[in-house]
Length: 65
Image 1 (cartoon, rainbow, N blue to C red):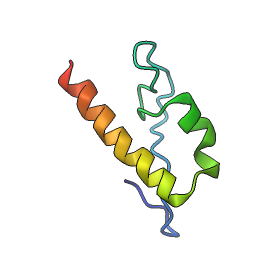
Image 2: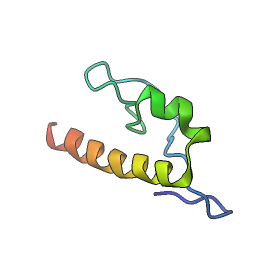
Image 3: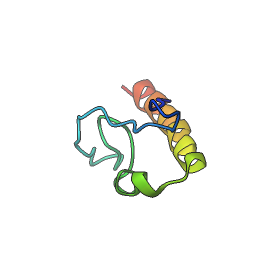
Image 4: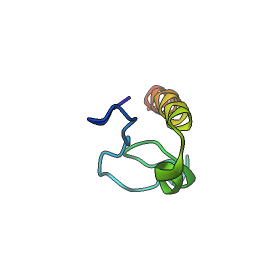
């Protein structure tokens, strides 16, 4: 998880913005379109939950390669 300078939870965006049609997650950050669109209004707890989900999604994607 990335922290901003003010200590808040940072965005997982890596500037590779393209949706995987099989998983419906972004190839770069592994977020859904809803998670991407709502990121700025999520609470810190919700952002932390998204980061945890991303870790699991990425591990799952890497194991199916």
